[in-house]
Length: 161
Image (cartoon, rainbow, N blue to C red; front, side, top):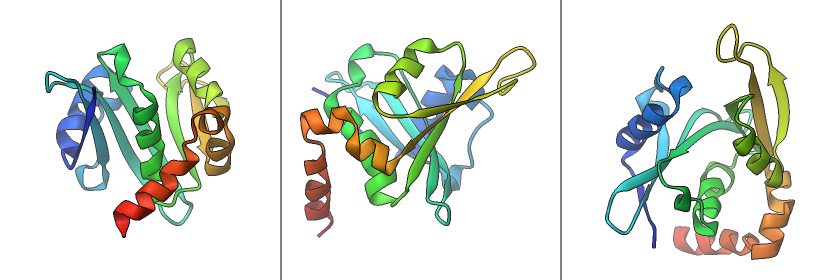
């Protein structure tokens, strides 16, 4: 059973930055929000960091990392997208991914992300991919249709009331 922590943005951001080299440059603390994923033993095993929020454009950037492959449950995936799309009202999220990370790119394609290659994004010899997901693509993807995550919208609205 996993648990989720909110409000520990700096700790979770530091955890993610330790695992993702291109995130080590840091984020602006006051503009960063994060979700930590905690295992049954109470250890932080994964983190999601949201930054570069542009309310006018309705966009936000996401970075995530884990030390345990069991972190990516249906519940985690639902929470991952609730924050940017439902709480922030974003119309699109994006992330920068090294072009050689085929495993992650395949996962993102399943969720409906679109890809744009950017030469030298991670250095002279290392290309990157800008991965973007619109709200409509997320709401209509087969994951949401199969597991009924559209119901999460109503749950969040009830919690907010």
